[in-house]
Length: 212
Image (cartoon, rainbow, N blue to C red; front, side):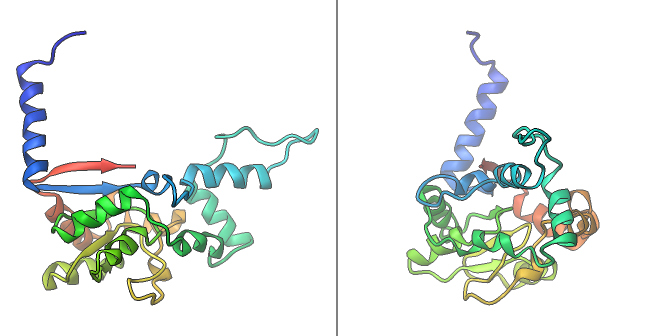
């Protein structure tokens, strides 16, 4: 095995220095919520279940696991033919069992580390509450700009929306699960420059820790 070069070592050391100094931001994906006791499925796992249920093959078989269109395309189809509100996804927001990763992320939030997540569930917020703090859910596009200006306590930045805020009020309109809702934001939020500007500001000058 080759030894790492000087540039590689300095890059790693720089990242470690920023992490230990708290100068980092966290990007959390669906894999964060798979660990027990949360046990929430990822988008791919949801698609595998839907594919088996909705696309039986001739001869009694099913489509192969993993052979499905993108998540947003499937959600667009389901919204049009069976579930206009995509209510079946609300089970993600109903889970109240955070796992060790959620508790780590909660500690980051309380310490002032930016935590951005694509997850719809409220498990990071639940873990923040377990530390006797009241989180602020930032989900809607206008909410990103407002939150950056007002600097609310313990923000959790929900990139694809959230079913509820930290007090249980409905935010389902902020959910971006279909092709059309994602497309309106544009690739990399290019159609929402204000939200994109906030995200860039949160990440600027920080090491990026990607989980899940």
